[in-house]
Image (cartoon, rainbow, N blue to C red; front, side, top):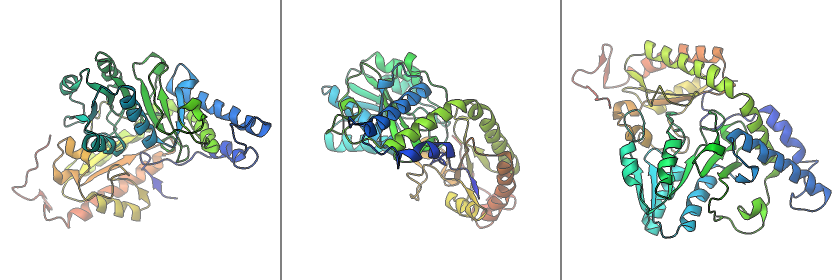
Length: 398
């Protein structure tokens, strides 16, 4: 087996999650909406899973959890619901570093539906410009959608503060928290956050399952209409095995939260420190003082991230050059560009995302392998000499 450090793209399904799911493919196959015993057994387990999601989020009521197919559906449902619930409000506030699930939807709503979109910039460490955020808020805003933590750098946004500011103008506040759920403690029962998206495959559940938290009392309009499933908020026969898997994954995430915050963070810090000390002209992107415990994004100057990933793969190491949803682009990621990372470094930005499965031995191997890969690639770079950067070429850091 190789070394898997691409957990922000997706995680390995925990064996305990698989075990919990298996009976719901074979023995417990009933439709949870059915009145007979086959259906009741499945329906009861779905409610158990809903309760586990509620506990992980610290929500007040299990009825605030709506199961979906994943983060993208949850994001779209939240924003479109807000727009329908408040039709006279024609503006949306978001950030420039959101996931494409948010940015693409906003682009569509702007170009095809005539909504005004406020895209709030970030500074060189990925921190949101709070002055511009405050200036964008008005009674014309239907919904604010700001991610809890960035998927590429791990930088955490002050979502509670942002939600309270949105409340002052009567706007709903939604957060895409797919990278934060299971890694950071949450207490939505005592929060101003109205809606929150999560995705199962980011926390050791299978792909194709997610949830949308909708605070009790928030106006809601379903995106999918049909049957009465999910109390009329999301039509379609429930994906029972995946829902059960998500419930188990949330239970495990709650039990292992301390490991994420201590052991995983320590391994991440050890990896970063060793790489920066061993390799010239590289630096950690994002805000090292305020980010997810599992995410390290290191920008190596004068080389291409795709080449780094290919050589890492030859060594059995899986990492990423950014979001898995945009990694096919030849352009530097929109997150690196938004932070003002110079192109010479943004092209070489490499994300190492750990999980509770990551071991110290694996990190030691990565520390041993990466410097040689960078040295090998820089020998091919026209901007690099044995003494460092080519004379006269001085990138400006943000």
